Image 1 (tube, chains in turn orange, yellow, cyan):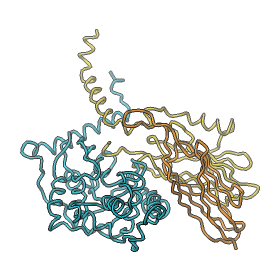
Image 2 (cartoon, rainbow over the protein chains, first blue to last red):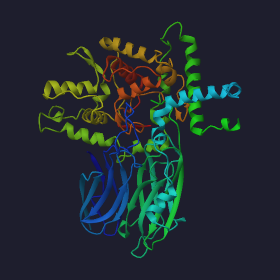
Image 3 (cartoon, rainbow over the protein chains, first blue to last red):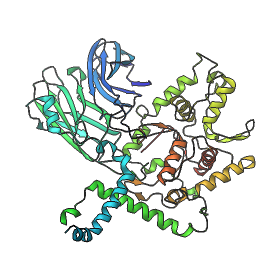
Image 4 (cartoon, one colour):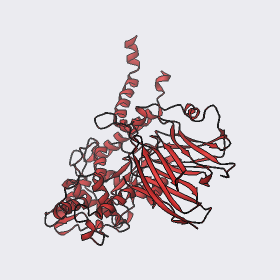
Length: 105
Length: 157
Length: 274
């Protein structure tokens, strides 16, 4: 599962920074059928979280209406140097993570 | 009576036979809509926010006016808010009025976001209004919407 | 009676499609059907060549241009990691230190050893079996798509520079013949849409010139990355013809013709298409 993250490596304290995240996932809606007409079982990412030094600063609950290979962009305020952790959780509880380091001056 | 009607509706029957053929050809494109009816969007809003009624305003939804494909439509939602400790957005929920599940995503943010603005890509089961409802820290609800026409592809495979 | 005339817009659109396809198919096919399936005419005027990007809506164009959010970049990233992967065998980049910059633009080409036309997918599989002791990869597998997309991205911005004469001419001629041959229940040749009618509307879409320079591409309809051969198969199915297999000689020859036909268009892979 390939993940792409866009986050600045440094920011001034108080800056509002844009964070972007994209992950390779079919987001199988459960409404499609295969070539034999059988329904394809739903298989989606259910939650996305962004933790900033351990604190959740953004969270999204996702439904089948989110496009395949989910793309998200959102903002947070740079408060202190540390780690941004991006986590996806699928409908079965399996998780995928990626981190980015942020230096705040 | 039935014989008479049959004779008089022959063009209609022909048309229906044609339609049947055409629908068979295009079946794949309509799959999401054809195996799941749209959900009542007002009920979906009520399920998430209870009896509170969103007021129009403060929420700007952007999607392209014409989408050449409903599988990945760029969406942006911005909410007019100072994003201070006293006054900020806590939630932005996105609803698609013609999708089998009206709720598309439920974004939770807080004062630390600094800016109440999100972007994503969504699925649209046909031309429709996309509605976003923002919940403020004082409990008030605001909503906005945008419309997109999902066009039909040239060739259906 | 009145109620019978009320038909839903979806059905009306379906009916319009049927009529459009019948008119489009039969009117164009009326002349040549009896004499020959080969629709003989000149190639696309090279001064008029335009990328498929020009026929997309602005939002799809933006998605391709987005240096972060182009979804095809997920496959390119994965391809780069695979290119450098030396956990089980010698990595691609240990031989190809130049990261195969500009190499994609020269394919398909004649493989002297195998004495056949080969595209990048075929070349990857040959490297795997000959030099890496690995199994060949299947078309549309994530691994083959990722490697192909990464190698294609290393030629991004360059035009194709395929050889079409000498020993390759017979492949090229057959690829050209494919493009100009009517096929399927709609009895349409590629040229009838992509040379004769590009720029015109077919239902909600503007017909493109059918260039290959975006592939492997992320197609919205597929909701995933896909190969050029998958795209060609979709066109064949679109005219209700039995498609050939990905990697078949027919599609390789057509790929060669398409690469030549796109003249100086820059390679855009990973493209985003509708």
